[in-house]
Length: 255
Image (cartoon, rainbow, N blue to C red; front, top):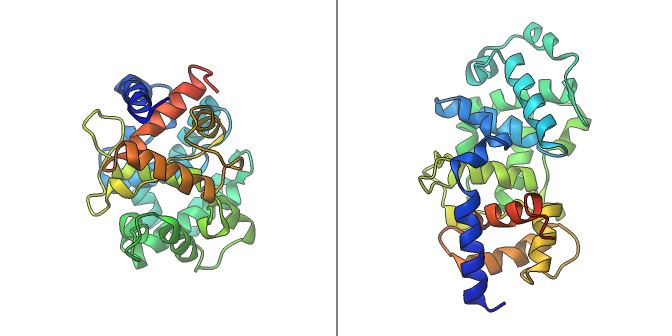
């Protein structure tokens, strides 16, 4: 496929899937239940963190997490007492368990108290055009308070060549805004041109089939390769093609 044909094909799929209907079957529905900026951020961050595996199960368990936070995520994070975390004891989503959720609540409080919140903590501060270092530094800040070592695995580190799929998805939700009502676009200090595609099995396989990704592993090197191609198709909003790659893979079994 020539670049113009490819762009036309993918733009068509973006229009098809980047639509409010998409919300009904996607984990992004969880943060859409909130209207306050910090509530949206925290609900989105926790939901993105457990976004692997069966989508129905992700949505179900993300709802459970928010119930445990009394459906007031920001208020709960900022004002909880140690005792309030006991209700988390039976929570589990795959390898993310109650110990991890307790840690995430404490670390989120630390981020809001000492790093001016998630928007600032994840901002690009090295003049680069990707979130590679920003995510690495965010992870360091997130775990600079006492924590269980096991919980560290739930935030990826792109400097260790992880594709950081879940944080990149969270960033897309927060930064990208094209008025279709799917992504939130509430982080005005961030630039959508710097976003990377949340690379997973589906989007990776579709990208390879389309010839826009050669690398076999779904890691940060592959993401860099994919970024270059997608930024040629739309330099201001490259990550919109996540809708096309995801839709083709999950709904159309294209790969």
